[in-house]
Image 1 (tube, helix red, strand yellow):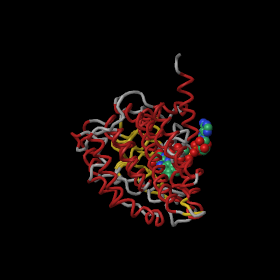
Image 2: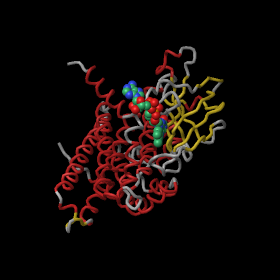
Image 3: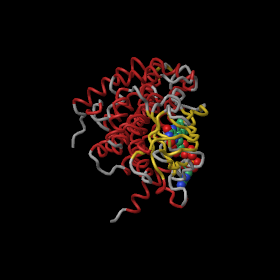
Image 4: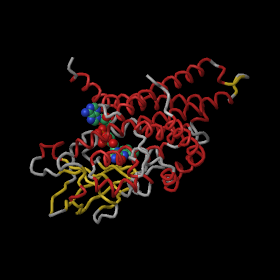
Length: 385
Ligand SMILES: Cc1cc2nc3c(=O)[nH]c(=O)nc-3n(C[C@H](O)[C@H](O)[C@H](O)COP(=O)(O)OP(=O)(O)OC[C@H]3O[C@@H](n4cnc5c(N)ncnc54)[C@H](O)[C@@H]3O)c2cc1C
């Protein structure tokens, strides 16, 4: 067993950390305050290769894989969780299913643009009545000659206002609603497709610099050549993709928690009470020690899940465990970070209040904490002894 990163991955971690420290961290507070999506910096991340790590070299990416994707998302999220999720969605939820399930023509058309960040990706599964119950899709896709006509509204789509390519899930078996998961198809929909509109922009508790919008489809005609995978097999694609997505959100959570620890270590050594730095008090030392230990444990689970996925091995259980562990841990770390900062932590003078707001989402999207518990329990209960 080898816990060392390869030379390539170590270099990637250092490059991403420097980029995050120089180009992301100094602006994160301002982007959050202004609810501003930093398109220029996301594009710079693309120029650096951070949007092509899960895309094979033949399509212009580096093909480094899921472990690389995890490192990128963690390092970016340590600086700004909004940039972290934008890149994670692009890499894990769009580039990856396109690579795995796309035709040669689809891959040749879209992957090179995605590898450089010329095009950004979004994943449109959720609807008003299809959240945790994602198979309950109401968006319809009706075949019409060599096209499908899509109608419906997708909710809370990350990068919605800036994405150039959407993976949209819609119901193609309209005659038998009981088919649920078996009647869903995935489509590659370009932003410029007539009938696709960006709807309401959400005002959020956290990750305020990420774009979250409705996507409205009104008689949106998508060429049949843009079906991703097979007609009626879209739900399998959605779930396989979420395995990778959960590794991404686990990585985002680890990055946020690491930022909490970084700030707390600094503040605890600077802040004096009773004539000593508060770091001299055992109560504070315990908090720091527990945060550091929990972060390391969650990071190992996340990296194990990424390692399994890179080897093509089953990783649903590992990905759910990683997301559950990392997201709940990040929320605990953020609470402790605010506590260590005392009153200062409750103000916008320090970044920990932002980390606390940002950490919250990691327990909600790409499968809530409750759904992760279900996935993990079901896998154990269904396992043959
Ligand atoms: C900022 C943000 C960004 C997002 N980005 C995207 C995106 O890019 N693409 C996309 O498709 N979606 C996206 N989503 C949607 C997200 O994945 C869903 O919000 C999430 O899956 C939960 O669905 P819901 O909000 O409808 O909650 P619900 O499913 O209504 O759940 C409400 C509560 O009930 C619990 N619950 C539900 N079912 C069960 C059950 N069987 N057992 C126990 N408890 C249960 C849940 O855990 C939760 O606590 C985003 C959401 C947000 C807020």
